[in-house]
Image 1 (cartoon, one colour):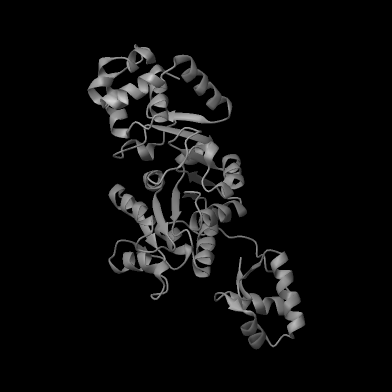
Image 2 (tube, helix red, strand yellow):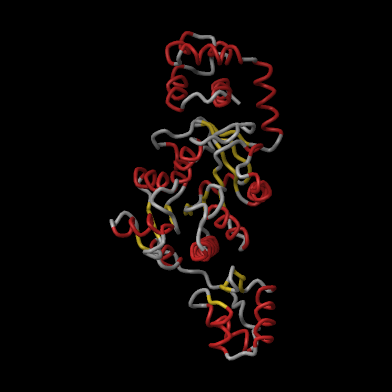
Amino acid sequence: MTEKEKLLVFMSMYEVSNKKQETLSDFFDDSKAVDDMVFGKEFEEVLSAEEVKKLRAGFDLQALNSSVENIQRSGIKILTIFSEEYPQKLIDLPDRPLILYCKGNLNLLKMRGIAMVGTRMPTNYGKIITEKFAKTIAENNFVVVSGLCYGVDTISHKATLSVGGKTIAVVGSGFNNIYPATNNALADEIAEKGLLMSEYPPSFQAKKYTFPRRNRIIAGLSDGVLITEAGLKSGTVHTKEYALEYGRDLFAVPGNINSGKSELTNHMIKTAQAECVTSPEDILNYYGVEKQAKANKYISLNMEEQMIVNLLDDGEKDFDFLSQKTKIPTNILSSCLTTLEIRGLIKKLPAQTYALS
C-alpha cells in the first residue's frame, strides 16, 4: 500500500468528508511520508482547526501500519481510487468513495448488475415479488446488488444465494459491526460466495446518515435499479435519486393502489421515471438477454400436487380457496401442501396462505 493510500485509510477512520479527502489527495504524492502529510500545511488549509487538532492528536504511524496489516490479514481488501481493481462504474461519479473495504470476489465488480431495493417491511406481495425477481435475475448471470438491511435487501440477497447466484452487499457500517446484527451470518455467506463492501473501516458503527450515503454506491455499481415495493417516504427514494443522477436504468413493480408500501413504485411508473416491469423477463428483455432454460422442478408431482401448483402459479392462495377449487379432501390437501413445502416448491405464509417458492 502506498503512502497516499495509507493517508486515505487514516482519514476514513476519522470520518473526513469525501470532498476534503479528494482535495487533500490532490496535494500529495508518494514522495512524502504519511506523517509528513498529516503534519503538513495542506492539512491546515483544507481541514477545520478542530479536524486538524483531532487527526494530529490521534495520529500514530506505528498504529496505522498495524491497523492496515490487521485489516489485510483478516481477508479484507482495501481498494482506493488509485487501485487497479477500483470499480470502473464508480470512478467518474460525483462524490465517489475514495476508499472501499471489500471481502470476497472482486470480479463481480466487472459483471452486469441489477440493484434490488425497497421497503424494510414488505407485504406478502412484496416478499413474493422480490424473491421471484431476484432468483430469475441471478439465474441469468446478473449480479444482484443490495444493502443487507431488513426487508427487500435481505430477501434479495437470500433468494440470489438460494439459486447459486452472485450478490454484492454494500453496508453502511464496518464489517465488525454489521447492521442489523441478525444478518451477521448472511454477511459471512455473502463474503464467501459473493462480495461484501463498505466505505467504512471494520470497527465503524452504523449511523443514521451512513445508509443514505451507502445508497449512492449501490446505485453506482449497478446497470439498473429495481424497486419492488416502497413507500414515498422510504429511504429507497435516495437510491432512486442517485440512479436518475447517474443515468442508471430504473425499474419499478406496480402494486396495490391502496397500499402505502406501493406508493413510490406506482408514482415512479405514473410519472415515467421508471420502466414498469411485471415479470423478471421484462428486465431480461430490456437488456436483450434470453432467459436460460432450466430443468422442470415440478416433473415428479402427482395429480393433486400439480393441481395445487397450477393454482398457485396465479399468485398466493389460502387453504380454503385451494380446498374449494381442487376438491381434494382436507387431510390429503394438508399432506400435499406439507410435502410441497418440504421439497421447497411452495412456502407457507401467514393466515394459512401459500405461494410458490
